Image (cartoon, rainbow, N blue to C red; front, side):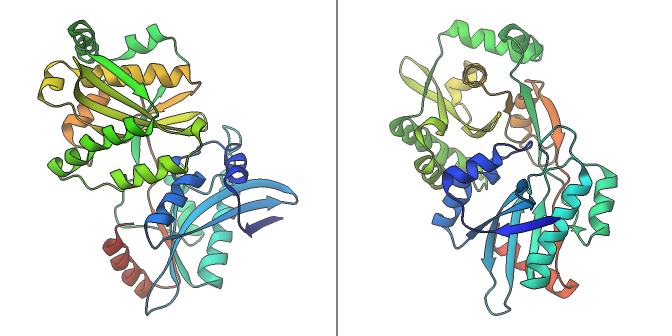
Length: 339
C-alpha cells in the first residue's frame, strides 16, 4: 500500500534518494530548495512515497502560509519523482498525486500548485482532472531541448545547423578563448556582467545573481556549477553558467556577448566548450535551459535552435484546492509573490 512520509532529510540522504529516479530536475535537489528558504519566506517540506520499506517516489515542496485567510500554498515544481525506469506506470504517479491532495488539501487545507514531470499528452491531462487537479489557466509547460552527450565530439559538432557551425568555426579562427572553472572568483566575475545583462534586457527570472551565489555556496565542491567565459586578449566577452544533477546538466544562466563578442561569435565557442566539458564530466544530457517559442526572446531562441537538441515540453501547471473561491484568492496571491 502506498504511504506518504513527511520528515526531515539530510543533504546527503536526499541526494541518494532522488538520484535513483528518472526526470530529476534542478528544482528537486536539496540545495535548490535550501537556497530558496534562506533567501525568502518559503519553507521546504520533503516527502517520500513508500511501498512497504521501498521508496518508490519523492517530492520536494516549497510551502508558504497565507496571512489572514489561513492554510497556505504548496508549490511542487517537476515532482513528484516517480519513474525509476524509462517506462514508468502513470497509475503510480496518479496514486501519489491523490496522496498529496489528501495530505495537504483535505487534511491541512492548503492549495497545491504542481508541475508533474510528464510530457504534454492529452490522456494524462484528463486523468489528472479526473483525480481532482485542474489545469491552471492556459499555462504552457516548461519547454526546452536536450543534447545527447553520448554522441562523439564529431557527431555533436555535425548536428549543429550550418550557420551555427560556421559561426563557431569563425570564432575559433579569431582567437577567442574560453576560461573554465568553479572558483568563487570566477563566479563573482560572471555575476558582475550577468546582473547588468538582466537589467538591460529587463528580464525577470528567479535565477538572480544573489540566488546563484547562495546556491553555489550550498553545493559541495564536486557538484558546484561550472562557469565558462569567452575572452580575447584578456577582455571579457560573455559567459555561461552550467549546473549538473543526476545524468543531466543545464545551462542555468548566461549573459549575451557584448558587441565585440557578437562580432566574434564568442557565444558559439563558449557553448561548444561547455558541451564538451560536461560530456567529459560524464553527463548524458545537456539541457539548453529553456526554449519556448512564446516566452524565450527570439534571438536566444534562434541561437539555441542552432544546436538541434531534442525538444520537449512538460505538461503544465495544475492546481488542487477545496473550492473555486479559494482558487481565485490564491491565484491572486501567487501572482503577487511571483513564485
